Length: 414
Length: 113
Image 1 (cartoon, rainbow over the protein chains, first blue to last red):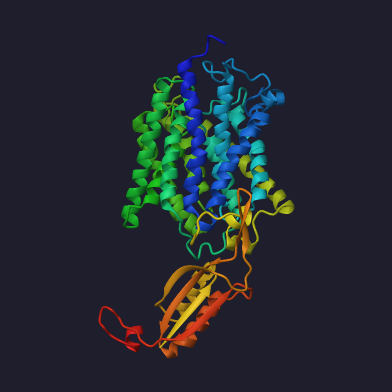
Image 2: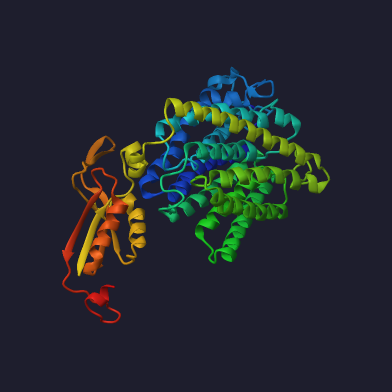
């Protein structure tokens, strides 16, 4: 065993890995599951749970190698780490010098799991399960793995350029959020939307899921310090602060505009705050985190409540409205609020005398959006021809739990 | 006075409600029920055990009306609920001997309207 391994760091990243796992199932599963109708709750939860299983295997077999393996032209990793060949217990100093390389690998696995799961919010209640499986595997391989390499992989072009993305604002939230919008537009609206409002069937699930996401996000952001150290503490506080500020902002806006503070508004605001602080969690002070939370509360409220209602696209559970918009804003705000006194390995943002950082952040976001939209569009065009994207109308009416899984979540009479 | 009882597909409820409101019928009671008619059931599996579901989820609407409102009510329900396929449901019209509004004690036609 190498003497370079720090067992305090190792313990914290093991815990963080488990925390990020918890974000997908049960966190996201309950958050999304509560938002759909009774007849679709199992199918929605199944999508998150299934991805936990499928991407776990994909990542071991070839996903990790594509994202973090030896660089090919700044674009993608090569296949020399296929099946974790050469990825052992010795630390890899390029990524994390004080923990076993396999621990870094499995920590990153949980990020690869949750990212396609975020997209499921866009096509809820009408997707064919088989198409969802094939799409998710291809998307994880052709979109997530390359984009993760650009930003985090040794030799990745955005990393080399100096783009700051502490815990995955661009890699996780922008890529999935914008792909979610493409998916929502291409699969079409749910039957009855938007004329008949489709109310969430269990808001207690949604609040439970949002709170579990918040809890798991400490592993996502503070864990991204890759050590049990001062940077982890700083990221932990920034994360909690932004979530609280964004939730408060959303609740207050609703209270003023719609007359009542709502639970769903609070839950949505908190998730938006967590999304926005993700890229900057390790680079900003707590006071900056408050500003980031307030700004994302305002912007995501506008995108979900005003813009979506105006254009009437059916981003059913607001995967784009929260993750795409919040992630983009967060990546750009990193270029404003980042400070070297918080993290010497980072850089200063526009507000602290380095305007070029904002430009680099902008390039990172645009490249991620452009690439994700293109690949998602092509994938969906092909899958639509071969498999079809959505279930038949009668299956949609009957519900996906029954038609895709032969189960029902609730009985009326035992 | 008549009691109109309709059993419809759950997903047609918004359409039926809209058709009733358009016909200026605003008073109704709606409940979740399960039952079986001509529509065949379906199967569910739980850890390999197959469970035959023959009672399907339906929505029941109860509307008490004065005689002159029976036809508009029935027409509105059909307009909202009909797809032409098995499973669209049924409408029952029964005589209603009495109706009392609790708040005022009014009886009969006045209590219904």
